[in-house]
Image (tube, rainbow, N blue to C red; front, side, top):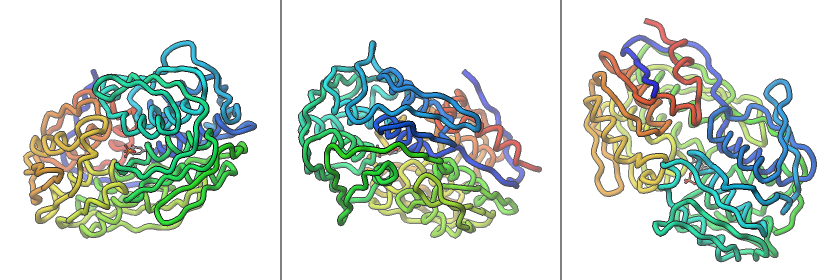
Length: 429
Ligand code: S3P
């Protein structure tokens, strides 16, 4: 297992392009596979999660080819055109692959099994199995409601569903199943979650109807092949923005980042913390607006984050909590129950990670309270195989005094394989 050592101190300067957005990349491949004709995706997220989606689709008969310039061609099989896999489908560490593909598999009349690594096989799948069963799919889970998940689909009927949890993965699974179902499918959500599936439906020629927090689609709508240029991932950009904003004297420009308000909660929170982040429009890509982010070092202050903001920053809580630890004054993040079900129990893990660096953070119910004003000191961190914790620990090491060792640091390659090298290349004394 690789360990990465980071010495505290210095400044960040320069420009960076982050990898393509992971959520958009998964969807570009899945929609390409379900469309008629050959789709092209470029700038796909290079991490292991998106490779898992490609591998699962290949096992279901979809052909991909790699063209120059990082372009991936997907030969679409049309709705309902996937073929039964020869063996169990391996989703690796990827919850998005598992849940979105559960929706697709529910629309096919063969039986298949999907599972992944130890962390994935601990994550809750009832949330996706229940609505898909209500549409007519037969789904078996383990006794604890986790993968391996066996799915026999086909003959689905449309569903009107009010989501009990705020989850774009569940919403997307139902919409993907709805494409294969007879009649209308409507998904209503209390707090808006990322809307990439809705945008992708439009890009592939089957725009959904959107009304007051609900998405409506008709079954059987044909998808036309499309070209998707994937924008930079804001969840990866967040590490740069916080690392630059939290130390005076630094300045980082992050180019071509997806600018979508359903993902922009972290920027709104950093703005309330007093961070200097300029946002400049950049050319749109893949049906999504984009921006350049220019983050400058300065002083941060503590912040209150409300529960209904969490879906728009759910993957950025670890790095925002680190910003809160070095800010002046207390911060409170409310309603973080969903973080218990990520690649690790991120709620407990964040409090523990900050504690190891000498910051004071505690969990109270579903809230995280971070004392602020910490002088971080180097630490030894086990990121629990969670990519976002590993990268948060690395940034904390940069902000700390002394040396930090991040065990098993290569888990960052789930979403951002070049993160540490990119980071080191932009540091100066
Ligand atoms: C994602 C949705 C979110 C997010 C994950 C990607 C997606 O998960 O945490 O990294 O692409 O739909 P939930 O749907 O579990 O909130």
